[in-house]
Length: 369
Picture (cartoon, one colour):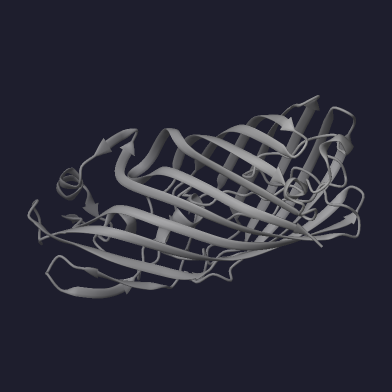
């Protein structure tokens, strides 16, 4: 992309989950933004990268842009490794983390998460840009409860939700090489623990009563940790065809005050794109994600559920996404850019039992100021 194109904004997670989870806030989330294509592509050296790729180019010097985005993620059913397992199998074979002599009694059946975020980017110099991002998240879980102390007697299903602000992010992107075909960039960033990791929810317990407890790790809006965000992006273009590869990591630097931190997250992307007209580019992206389990534990996340076990987080996932970016000039909105991307997993190998991702969709609009 040319130096007139904007800097991508941030999309969070698990999530992380994820990544995860995205964990869910971490696994659910991906990192990305809306490229600035408010000018025609005939004046640019490259079309926009996919929405889910962070750090694909640097914004124009001295110019601000703001991006608004939504990430929607659906998870359902559980896997151990690559194998799908039933709730009855889980409650008869999976021990409670705090007392392995007792089986778990609550099994999450589905989670739906939405993340609404805003990011502000600025072109500091010809080859340097910065971005600040913040957001709000809501997560809703459906959980199956089995009667205590063991067995497969189904007691009922309950629903709970958690909402709050996400962890904030600050990042810089440095373009280190560019010619008529190729460009190479690196990014460095940090997240700050502005989101809560002490949220509570109310679920049906195995004794038939409803209890208010600290929400599972994946249901928390924030991580409680300061995380380092390294990355690089390579992009190329010839005529209407474009392609690229990218990496971004999220590495917690130390445990949070509750005594745990998520495993290191590694996101790898590869994509191809085609510009049908100057204002419309479509992309196909494949993403590979790997993450370790949670290290340490929160003694107050003590529910008899697989999601309260820090070892049942992380794993590997491969996903396939299709997307499109549309210049606002197509609708006489010269300063706006619109983008959408959606995808499904084609491979998941999870530390489980753990809910697996079924789909994810991202929508965004970017406005050059």
